[in-house]
Image (cartoon, rainbow, N blue to C red; front, side):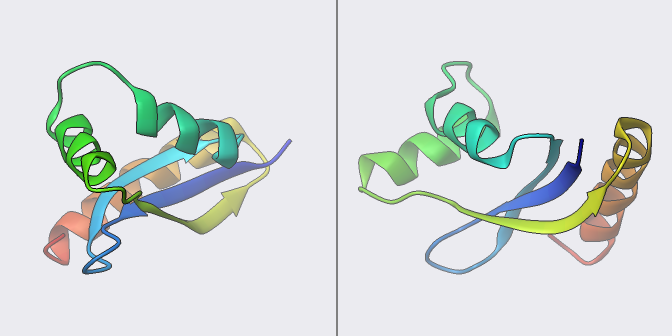
Length: 85
């Protein structure tokens, strides 16, 4: 099984707004768009959907093991924070 590191990007600015990991990008994308919990990310997604927009999902890396992917997610989150995203 493959595991992926992905970003959710703003469709207007291409700004990276979220970094995550998944084994099924299509399913995870759908789940993001329709999550009900109140978080900063979900509020952003709801505002996009209200305006008939959806985030862009970009696969940035792939791994053969879930453990490798977990470590990579931590790395990528720290890296994007360091770059100012």
